[in-house]
Image (cartoon, rainbow, N blue to C red; front, side):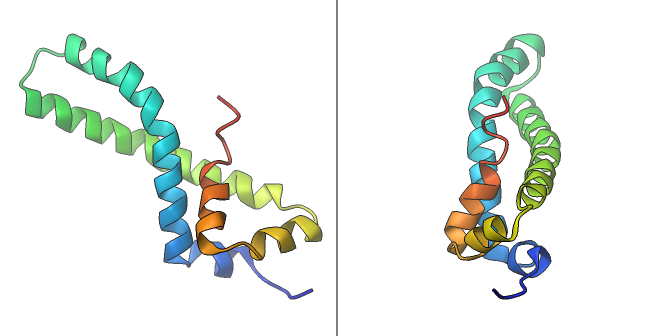
Length: 107
């Protein structure tokens, strides 16, 4: 069994982070579109580009903590050496999907 670190395998690997961020965005965007779009459209009387800007800013404000929590929960879910080895043997795309889907069953 090799000694691999989470930092080296995930946190500095841009491909894994990009796949994880895309998966987290996909999981988070559906509820935000269903709940947030009508709330912004009917709640704020402003021009359409201000409403789109507000939606994008709110998306980023919610996405960043969600993504950080996905990374933290994934790191702590790899408690046993067997689970860690299975995770590290996945491809970059599969690692990203596992990380991005970490909180999908919680809400």
